[in-house]
Length: 191
Image 1 (cartoon, helix red, strand yellow):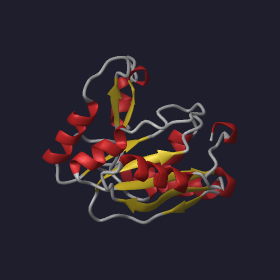
Image 2 (image 1 turned 90 degrees about the horizontal axis):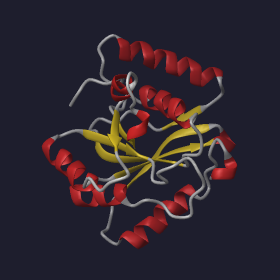
Image 3 (image 1 turned 90 degrees about the vertical axis):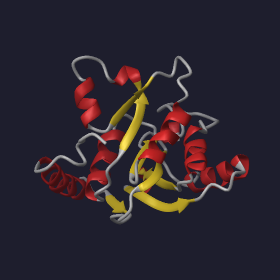
Image 4 (image 1 turned 45 degrees about the horizontal axis):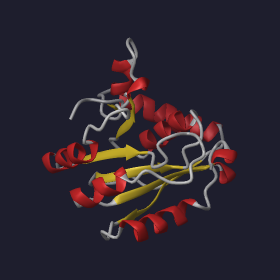
């Protein structure tokens, strides 16, 4: 896998230290611990603001995860595309079917360690139905889903438990959404 902000010698430890200090200064608590084996799908919700990105970037750095994240291709324009990819970004063109689920499953089969962060809402706006690609990726790749979250009501961000897909997507999605129903995003009106 390519070098990112989470794996760049010298720079990553410096950014980790800065992240720890900034999180403390702004009063946010981090939940979760460093994980030895990093092979899972990480979902992050509620995703309600552009500020979710720098907040989760700091949390991920602090907890020493090596994450790649999916974002709409319009977040990767020239000349910023290289920076966004270094930040772990994988551009996704949502205007056409590109078989993202199967390609991501293939990547899991080729790598012993891989963490892909996917916001299940697919947007910062309020939604009534989540996208299920993250679930299908985890189920087909036989990897667990780590429940990452932002809870602005408690000024807390981090990772809760692993969820193992049963294959019953409807039942599993209800259980996952139930966990997030108690979390408030940075823009509560979009939670």
